[in-house]
Amino acid sequence: MYIAFSSLTSARRPAVAMPGTTIMRAMVLKAPGRPLVLDERPDPQPGPGEIRIRVEACGVCRTDLHLVDGELPQARLPVVPGHEVVGVVDALGDGVRSPALGDRVGIPWLGGACGVCEYCRRGEENLCDAPDFTGCTRDGGFATHAVARAAFCLPLPREPYPDAVAAAPLLCAGLIGGRTLSMAGDGRNIGLYGFGAAAHILAQVLVHQGRWVFAFTSPGDVEAQAFARSLGAVWAGDSTVLPPEPLDAALIFAPVGALVPQALRAVRKGGKVVCGGIHMSDIPSFPYRWLWEERQLRSVANLTRADGHAFLQLAAQAHVVTHVRRYRLEKANQALDDLRHGRLEGAAVLVP
Image 1 (cartoon, helix red, strand yellow):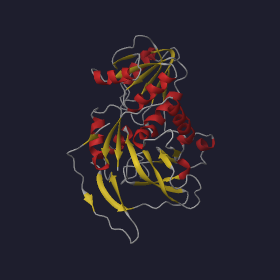
Image 2: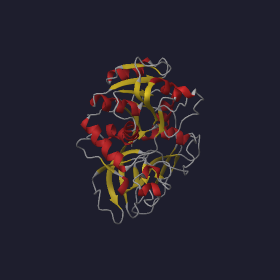
Image 3: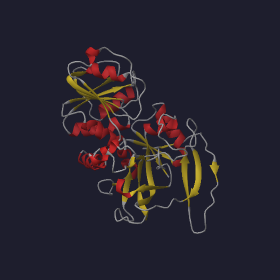
Image 4: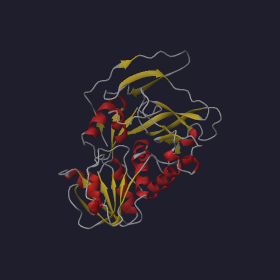
């Protein structure tokens, strides 16, 4: 782990607070395609059913890049990005009994669901018709404090999660990766396309389960391939080539539509291709024979609270070690730029 410094600067707007209140810092997206702006504002106050946390760490996810680039039409601007948030509860809204003051929690992407639509009634809150998304439709964790609905926070006790920075990537790269993995079935040979934050976590889980990891990277990215092998991959190579044996499932985390036909060619008859991202470039046309023989193509949308609890337990059992690069909160633009250009091994994490 090391600190990354940036030559990028952010404009600071001085805050005015009422007597008795304190000031928080936040990196704010005010318009698509523009750098985040460092803002100062009074600390947010939790409403009924909400908690406020003092942010210890917040991971930087590719979804944050899609947000900044204007590729998420549901975003409500201006907004504070960040949905891999770890922190300590320091204020409770009316009616909150759990978590308690001083508890450490995680705030994931799904920040709320309506509870009444047909999907919520079926237990599919990840498909809710009126969802709330942390760092997209409500302010997230690129800040010193954040407010969240208590019912949608996940407990992250210091045992088995002693390091907030290391735990942060589990809140999306881990959770969405876990949901993607749940759709893969129980096959032995699992391909991971795009060996970044999610894949480096899932590789460790798959090795723990006794499965074989086949890692696919950008062509010529020998560093990422070596990283994958160091985490137990039995094979690592370019995404443009076929693996040495057919895959039972291929999980795609890179937002590149051209990988879908490649992955379909790599899976066996009856195999599965699961797209784990919230956004992907257009998928090119491909021959039907690559899908034929009962191959399946699926997407993943968000997560449920049950997903979160289950994956955090699995990650602890697998003794997952996240590989992170720390950035000061003010260097959020540099972290996003490093993610965009593939300069990260593992995940970027902001520390206030």
